[in-house]
Length: 107
Length: 119
Image (tube, rainbow over all chains, first blue to last red; front, side, top):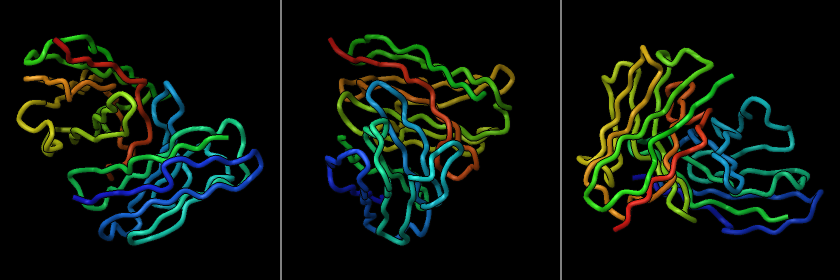
């Protein structure tokens, strides 16, 4: 099973600042990584797939990078509405599909 | 507009069974692979099941294999999750989700339905 590990668990950032979230796989998943945003009481929302492809309607301040085992999600200029928990997911080697434990972004 | 609406979540006792439904609208349900993902209270996301359009491929997480059964009715735009032998560890919000490109990632999610297993 591919294990996805996210860091940090919590990230406190001021509005307008840049935030970088990390996701590491215990074996190579090529570029088969997606990212989701989940706000309290809401369902997850797809942000990125294929590491760096933004989903429909996702603002350009969100960007993804990485390949193999190391991935990151960057929010270039944090807005108050970006406060959420972010999850990475791999879909290279499955089943099972696996998610990281999440990074909570506090603003 | 893509819409997924889960239902069926309730309070049940350990050992009991429950069937969840997910009603799809706004897209051609019969063209998309679908999955179930759950989230225990205060915890992260856990994928639990997935099926292709015709059901020729069905997958389960080890945590639910042999106890849960995924199915679908393409004519009625419905996805189901039959859950048997429930335990407290199955307490979670259950989401159905659409796999847009049959790749294993999910572009649309329902709002979730809460299943509580407690005596």
